Image 1: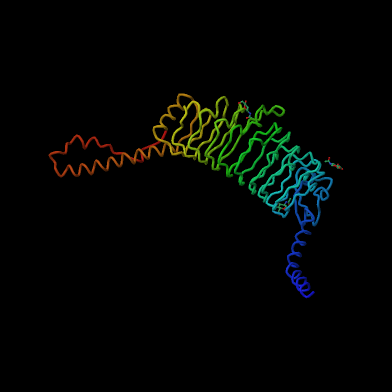
Image 2: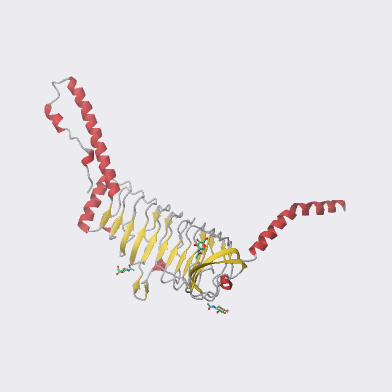
Length: 375
Ligand SMILES: *[C@@H]1O[C@H](CO)[C@@H](O)[C@H](O)[C@H]1NC(C)=O
Ligand SMILES: *[C@@H]1O[C@H](CO)[C@@H](O)[C@H](O)[C@H]1NC(C)=O
Ligand SMILES: *[C@@H]1O[C@H](CO)[C@@H](O)[C@H](O)[C@H]1NC(C)=O
């Protein structure tokens, strides 16, 4: 009995504060919007701020004359609950930025089919689950600057209108070739500043086909700048026919396989700031884009000469200003070192004037570094 009393006396004392804090947190979580200010657009008046003391559905706090957009910035909305953004009429843009969003529940937009643009930048989302975005009629989703490390393989399937997906500044380490089934218009994917190391075979198989909406042709653009990519599978882009921009700058590539772009028309290829000393394949297979940005790689200087020659004959633009400067300065350094050695030699020789030929002194080229310009 005593033992029981003791245990009953002690345990609640230990757990009560914990229990209380849990239930306070829980009750705070009971509504989606508590003391949240958002901006919307009022007919004839323009942008206007409204504040929700406590509520679950933004639509309940809009007047009949509010439309266009709903922007929540710098507020506290940890969970975007089911239907929290439902029933919005003629609201085409929703922004919930820098507002501690951690979780998005399936059905958060309910039947708000007019919403086309969604930005969830600067939140704390860690994963994208199946069911959250599927079948929505969004054209653009911006998930930049979250903490996304995992994306369900079906997370972006069946999105008939999606054209642009931004996932920059997240923690994504793997590209899944199964993403984007039945998302036929998707053309712009930006996954810069993540942790990708590899692009696998058939990575973009679900992006193939013409992307046409009304009279506009959307060409695929893929941005993978600032990752840790070392390997691109030779079949990575198979199935694609046109790529507007392909960005792999600031990665760890030491080559770019000549088969990668076979049969693909590319507008802009960025391979600058990688670890490329030279391309192993023929240049006319690698540098096929209209514009090839390959600067700031540790190029071998002879390789760079070949690249320059190729650029002249092929008419493809190749941007290599810094790499060329590197080579020129390496050449200058080499010349300077040679010159210095020569002068030392001459000094030595001067000690025995009978050997020092006059001719040799004139042969020493002196560079005026100020006059060296790069064409
Ligand atoms: C609404 O509030 C935000 C944040 O305080 C402010 O930046 C914005 O200018 C306000 N908008 C209007 C229309 O008052
Ligand atoms: C969404 O559905 C509710 C009822 O389910 C309806 O009252 C409302 O008008 C609908 N909103 C839109 C934008 O279709
Ligand atoms: C897509 O590519 C085609 C062919 O290269 C071009 O005619 C068209 O203008 C491009 N579309 C856009 C939106 O850049």
